[in-house]
Structure formats: C-alpha cells, structure tokens
Figure 1 (tube, rainbow, N blue to C red):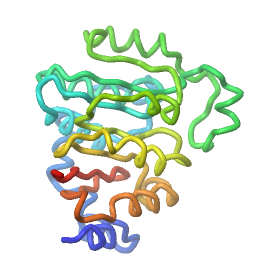
Figure 2: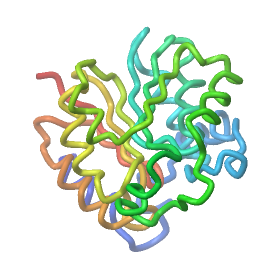
Figure 3: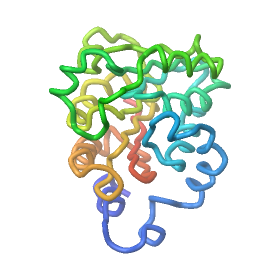
Figure 4: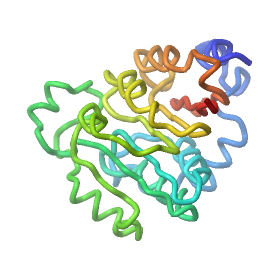
Length: 231
C-alpha cells in the first residue's frame, strides 16, 4: 500500500473504525491491555489513551540496545514513563524536551490552546517521577523549546516521539527527522482528523507522503508513525 493510500484509508471519517481498519485492530488493543494501564492518567495530567500508551511501550521496546529516544513535549511525564518502561531492557536513553513551567509569558504567546498552562508541571516534579521509576540515569530532561534545542543537536535518534505544540508539528518533523537513524521510527501524536487535530493530520500527511523515505506507516487512535527507510 502506498503512503497516499494509507492516509486515504486511515483518515476516513465514515463508518465504524473496526470495519475501516487501522485504528483499533486486536494487536493494538492487546498492547493497551497488557502495557497501557501502568500509570494514572489523571495523576499525571496526561492525554494519551491506553491503547496509544501500550503501543508507545511496544515501540520503545524495539529500539536497539543503548539506543536513543527523543520526546518533544513531556508535560507531566506520562508518555515519558511508558517510554522508560518499554525501553528498560534496552537500557535506552530518553531525552525529553519541554519548557515545563518556565517562561510562561512566552508559552502563552505561542500556545496552541490544547493544554492549560495553569499549574503546569515543573521539571523538578517530572524528574522526581523518573527517579521513582528508577530511571534517573536514563532520562535527560531539557527545559526549553524543541526549535531552539535542535540548533545544537548532534546525536542520532532511534525513536522520535513528537507531541509538543500542535502548531509546530510539521516544523518539529522537518527539523528533527534528519537525525533519525535509518530503520528508526517517528511517531506523531494527535495526527488524526477524528481523534486528534485536523491541522496536525494535514501536516503529518504532507510530511510522510514520500514513499521513498518512509515505510511501514501505522495508525493507533490519534498516533501516526512510520519507519525511516535505509538511505
């Protein structure tokens, strides 16, 4: 199936999704049941669904030993926790980028109005949560904006998880995927017109349109992910 055909089918808003495919096959549901209920969504203030969390865990488990996972958009550390647990056996390094509760005036000016900035989790709080998981040595929290951090980035990435400012999803994709290793995975949250945000869905379809560069596209609720082809 071409990438264009994938999006035509995955983005349909007609009919029950169990018939129209991709969104909730048995495998995704099973991952949600087995791995997607490890953490309290309300307690973390997170917005990922259990099925999405289960697949984050699964994808993180597939990175190579001592691999690198980059997360854009951390908030309270819910998705970070699933990335940590999933990649435990691989001893992967997780670098999570978020402004946390810093520079709220700038965040207010840039906000996509999808999450509240009131009482936004601090970097210190998320660090405590990672330490409680026994992952303080595997998680690096960078307080800042992805568009600034990428300017000095020089490390290859095995799994890139984009879940930051929705207005900048395409920019994050274009600036960060050049660092993605061949065979590495990119996943974008809120990238479905029914389950996410239409502007992100449009951006992701544009970003992954190239069959020569992206393969194995997958749709899990609001997540669209793909594998970077070897050069």
